Image (cartoon, rainbow, N blue to C red; front, side, top):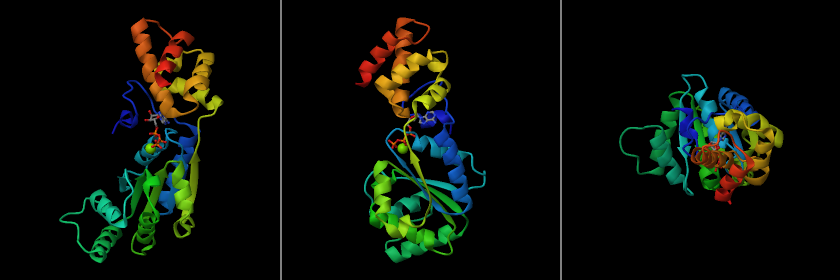
Length: 247
Ligand SMILES: Nc1ncnc2c1ncn2[C@@H]1O[C@H](COP(=O)(O)OP(=O)(O)OP(=O)(O)O)[C@@H](O)[C@H]1O
Ligand SMILES: [Mg+2]
């Protein structure tokens, strides 16, 4: 997959920026996978969690078997079993009885070490989290699990002491600081590469607020404005027009 696949809006020429959070995630994920442990990455919407985790997992050892599971609604333990069945590409029909299903999953997971990336983990309730713990605790499996979720993920996980006490590393994603914005945004997209740092700070204060997804949207509108006006560079008037679309 190309880096562009992880961009929220279709943004030609955007690059993945190696932010401090991304570097920390790389180290944390590497250590978690090496220890066959569980970790949790949590933080606000658009702060760059999904992009960071996908970038870091691609950089792992080529032999590492990584399976991605993304929840979009609140799953039951039964739904988690089905998601795992699909994520593991298991052949045949999913078993009908829970105990049979558990045996099948445990057998598959005992074959070799694996890493699960569980994104949107704020959707998981206690029962669903408990199912992951059950598989992870099973001595025959060698699972590493990376839970990634919005702000609520931390709260939900913390409520489950059986699971949260087993979390090896917690990583909190936050907004880019004003200093990080000035370092990262010129590397993010060519429209910012030669922009006046004051204009970048202006855009951050008025519109993007250190949120990477907001920066991606703002960049898309700024590209449009540059193309329509024929101006060579970003300026404050042009930025105000772009902000008006984000308000
Ligand atoms: N390190 C980065 N380099 C370049 N672009 C980034 C980076 N991090 C985030 N982005 C941009 O911000 C967008 C949002 O990031 P991402 O989807 O990873 O956020 P998230 O924290 O997973 O949000 P949510 O909680 O809503 O799932 C990305 O699609 C991408 O355009
Ligand atoms: Mg995400």
